Length: 298
Image 1 (spheres, rainbow, N blue to C red):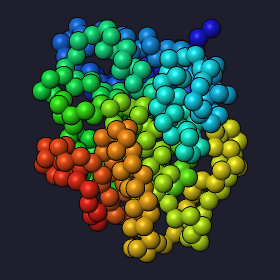
Image 2: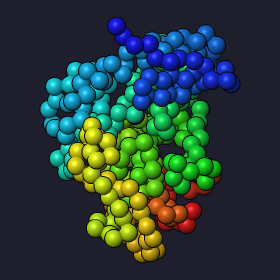
Image 3: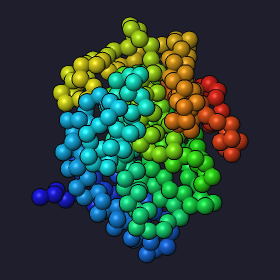
């Protein structure tokens, strides 16, 4: 029998909280009251049993992505599609896109049931967005996911191609092969943003540096999809030049993904420094220039 997830409105009465095992979503929809109600009902209906669908194919989802897949579920196949552009160049499993893919699926269910002005599904900081004509969405950026206080904001307008935002790094819920405090990616979809954030965060690195402590992922989490690969646990004192070199390594990866049209922009953060990659047409729409490629001290 399908397990029933926890579904309830938050205290503000506007946002819906959906939780089942490790999946924890905050959902908000804006529009006519009857349309919002229909959207929330659709979100709750689609969410029920979604974790079971993923668990049924978990062994393959935890193995390295290949060109072909035998995955059946719509979310599982979306996860695979999001990471497949990277499979030939590095080790990556579909789990690198799980949060964004789930958010995307719930948002799709909402939009299939209702006409909304604006909506988002936030899965632990990875967001799937819907913006009607003339709508916009402001995103707060922090220097690291486990910190507090928004450092700056980034505005996404309905005319922008961005509908997915995701953050990865060594402080997040998942392990990272790199040393980035946070890498936030803007992409056309949440699943694409999630996969790319993982790849870029892994690239922000200083291999074999004595101040960086790494441990096998499966020693920390026996069922990790990363197996015995070394993941970052601590980052000691780094010089300004070392921080710049690590950020530049990630930036080179981000530029490559941007050229391949896999992302719309990225914000890389390490030890208080920031490097931002992105197109100038988005930059000109910002009150601050977060999409201009530049390094600043946070």
